[in-house]
Length: 171
Picture 1 (spheres, one colour):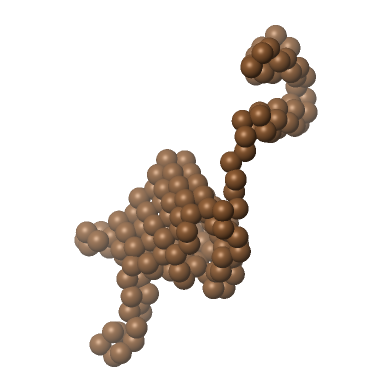
Picture 2 (cartoon, helix red, strand yellow):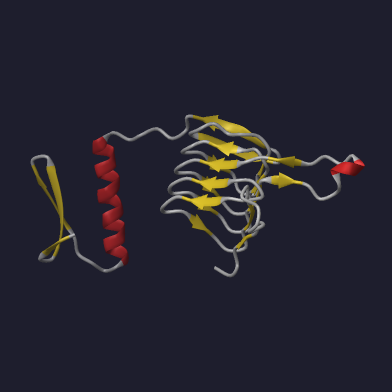
C-alpha cells in the first residue's frame, strides 16, 4: 500500500526484493533492497519496521564505513512492530524477533531474539504439538469463534474423526 516504501534503483540488477506467499508487510515499513532482500513464506513484518541491505551515507573515499549485504528472512518468521534489520542478516525459519529490536547479526531457526542489539533469548522455543493437542486447540478456538459469532456448535466424535456441527451444517 501507499504507506509501505520499498525503494531501490530500478537500473541496478543487484536490487532485488522478493516475498513468498502469505507474507504481510504492515504500514509505515521501509525496505531498501540495494542488495537482495528475501522474505520466505508466511513472514509477518510489523508496522514501522526498517530492513536495509546497505549501510552507507557518507563517502567511503573519505574513510567512512560502507557495507552491503543480503537480508534473508526464512519461512514462518514474525517481526513485530518497530524492528530494524541491518545488512547481511539471515533470520532462520520459525524465529520471532522482539518488538523494537535492532538485529545486527544472523539469528538461527526457531529462536526468540530481542533487544538493542538483539540477543538470543531462547533457542528451540517452539515445539510441535502432538496431533491430539492440535485437535484440542482447534476445537477450543472453534468454540471461541462460535461464541463470538453467536453460532451454536456441537462437537461429535466418531472414531478417529471429530465433527463440529452448526445447526444443520458441518463447520
